[in-house]
Length: 315
Image 1 (cartoon, rainbow, N blue to C red):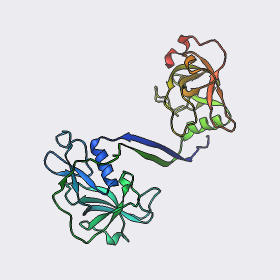
Image 2: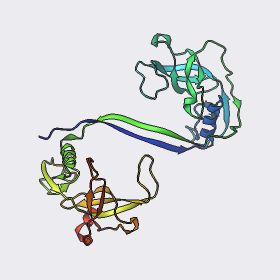
Image 3: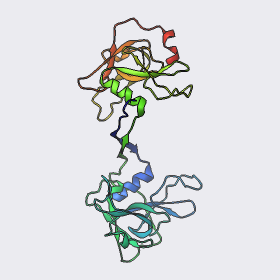
Image 4: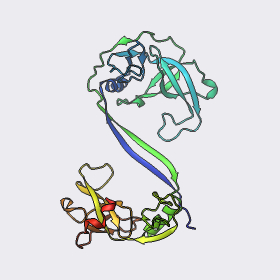
């Protein structure tokens, strides 16, 4: 049996979103050391604010300012902070109901240890030294024994100079990926510039990349079959938006490619031909970059286009 591969894998990308008037006012307010909530249809104040009432689904626009002090409603101790968490030393995750609000805000509490944290304790915001209009403008909460803030929030028009209209939030997932027996064999073959699939013992279809079982028959697969390296473009799209951290000039073409001998199309980039000349039925072959473990792209072979009937079941 093929040794199963296992390796750390990181999925990371910047998530960009535009902000509506409520979220824009909330984040801009944090930059200005002001915490805004929104008044719901029943008169309660929601912090963080939402754009629609959670009960009636009506749009909410009435902004109010609440205090920077509050009460811990529940908490959990974090003894081992991870990368990019609010504090580099052990801290408590807390839900804090700010004075004047009816809901709680999740953030970090700087405390010397779990014995110093309890439900009902009074805390206040510690502002970050540099603020940009993000939830990280609240550096953390800290214990507070001073006067409580007003229970009745004050109206706020939500108007600020140079409001924040969009944010970029980095998304990252770290985990150990174990592809399994079938895909381990597939990846090892790719390292040798070969492409292998597995044949279903019942329907006799060859699946690339292999899945370890036939998706149609539900039967385990074990018979390896080498396919390609040439194949046929079954369908494609033209990419016109340049992705961050991807050094490929737009426009370029991404296609589904049915390798010769395979009954499932895989995807790959098409190069070596003007993007507007890529077509269904185009015959292509892989191009490997030096030291690469998978094809960099596919290029035309110069053969006549494949007849539609030879690949129509894979479109």
